[in-house]
Length: 262
Length: 253
Image (tube, rainbow over all chains, first blue to last red; front, side, top):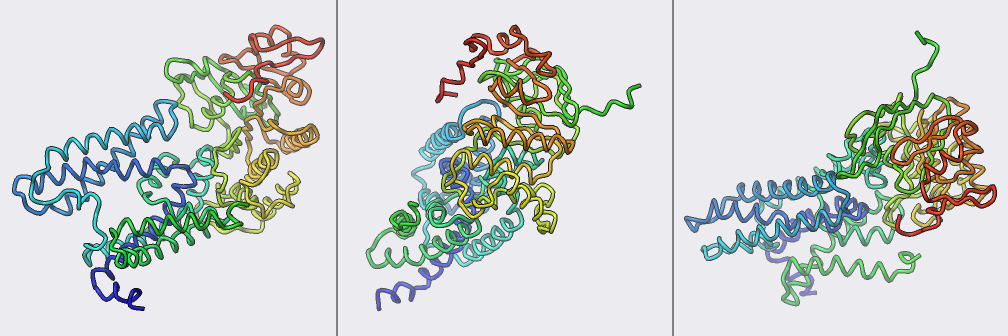
């Protein structure tokens, strides 16, 4: 049983597992909406869209001195760039008749290129930018775990409160507009929240009820975290990637179940 | 004067909506009285859907205005772009019709349940309640969406091509349902390309092809000239039968 217990002897693995589980709950719940609205590419675009913001914040705070970058600045940079991505996409959608994926892809490519251009100017400084961009699940601090858990609780509370408007919006945005809901703002809120898609995609195959889908995908995501870390420890794989691999394999397993194909 | 004339349910004044430079609707003015069934007739691209979208605030109005007398509006789009695996049952879909009145967290009461059960019965889909919406056939979906609209207990119904893909008996049953809504004082606007049903079944017809071609009771409105201008180039006369040829080009629409 060593293979099961050993990894969690190390504190950084325990912290990482907890953080990833909390993030998993967030992504599972929010990702359910992303999947249902067919916004998977949009969410991906958003995730990559933060690149220039992070790179600029990094260059401004760590650049010249070659010191550690300022955490708050990185968060702000990411948030600002994320909002620019979401806002730009919805602007294109409102001003033209292109499809949602097309608008998302255009902004995505722009932001990515912008980000890469900035990164190329920043490279060479002592701190590695990539670790900030891609994160390291085994390097999270206690504060970050706390923040993730607070966010997870907050998101679950928010989704409980906004369950009806979000359901209407996912089912039929036009109907939601006819009912007088602030569709644009709700849509943006959903977008800004969405990042990870494998657990909700899995859950959608297994249930015909939205609350079940959310609970199921949150559970899949939360369980994928410790399982992924186990895999990572025992097979010496990258930690974050292992978690995603576990989450995606649940999707493949669910596809094979008779109920999902019915 | 005219205290006896009730306010129109739908009032459009020189409504113009453009997509880019292309006008989708140009200078469209009409007033629909409350408690009428109206067929919105025109070929594909005539602006029928745009008119509905402008009425509920989804399309940007470039000039003029379109106003609804009530905020209680049920809009049923032509088709939903829905994930087939979307996890909702037919009962859930019909219950959504009550969300507008219930707000974000209001509890489902006796009246809500009555409206939902009544709508399921009206559309004859009680046996489908526990089925997943995405697993239904096209006609069953259409009925579930109409049940949702009915449960909403709206004053104004905007229905975009509700007859598409329905067999004749179902079509007739839907038409009777719209008439029942009308008899309860509701206003029902139905976008369609079906000339025959528009002329036979509705109180008023509104012939649209980017501009308003004609508006009034079908007996007075349906002249050959009006129909040929509405369907410019798309209508064949086969004996006494008018055929909208655009309707037969499936796919691209």
